Length: 319
Image (cartoon, rainbow, N blue to C red; front, top):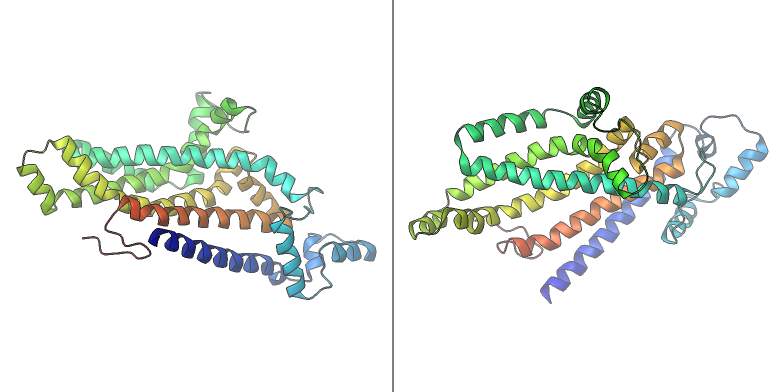
C-alpha cells in the first residue's frame, strides 16, 4: 500500500514536470529573433500567401496559451505536427528513426553495466597490479569524449582494419547490431570508466564495514562475502547512477549518431537544429526529456527494492 502511494506520487510529479518541460520546449520558439513564421521558414523568403498558410497551419494568429494547448492536444493524440524541412509528418520521421536510437542506447547500456560493474568488481577484490591497471584504463576512458572516441574507433576498426562499417544503420536486426557496434562502444566508453570507478569505490568502502569483518571471522567464503555483503550493498549507489548514465547516453547520441551517420533521432535532432526545423526539434526534445524522466522514475521505484535502507520516498542515510 505504501509503495503504491509512493508510485502514484512519483507518477504525478513526473506528469507535472513533463508538462512544465513541454511548456518550455514550445515557448522556446518565441525566443528566436523575428516572428515565429519567419523562424519556421528558416529565413527563406516567402510570399504573403505562404506566410498566411504557415500562420494557419501552426495557429500563430492565436494567443500563446491557445497555441500551446492546441499543440499539446495534438501530441497527446500522437500527432507531433509536420516537418518544415522534410514536408512530412514528424510522427512518421520519429517512427522511422526511433528504433535505431533505442537499439543503440540499449547496446551501449549493456556494455556500460556489464563491463563497468565487472571492472569495478575485479579492481576492488583483486587489488595490486590488476587494480592499478584498471584505474589507468578507466581514467583514460573517462578522459575521452564520445565524439573523439567515435573518430578513433572509426579510423582504427572501420577504415584501417575493416572490421566494422564506418557509417549507416543497416537493415534487419543483425545488420543493425553490426553497424551499431562501434557507435555503441563510442557511446559507452566514458560511462564504462565512470561506473567502474564508482563501483570500485563503493565496494572498497563496503569491504571496510564492520559487518563484513564479522562475516569473514565467522568463516563465510570470500566469494559469498563479496556477493552478499559487499556487491549487493553497493547496488544502491550504482542504481542511483543509472539515471545519469541513461541521460548521458541520450544526450551523446546526437554526437555519435552524427559521426557514424546513424539514422536515429539524435542525428535527426542535429539536422533539424541546423535547418531550423522547429517542429522536429520540439518533438525530439520532448521525447528525450520523457525518456529521461521515465528512467528516473523506474530508478526511484527500484531503489527501495534493491537497498532496504532507503525509505520509500526518501533518501535515507547510507549507514
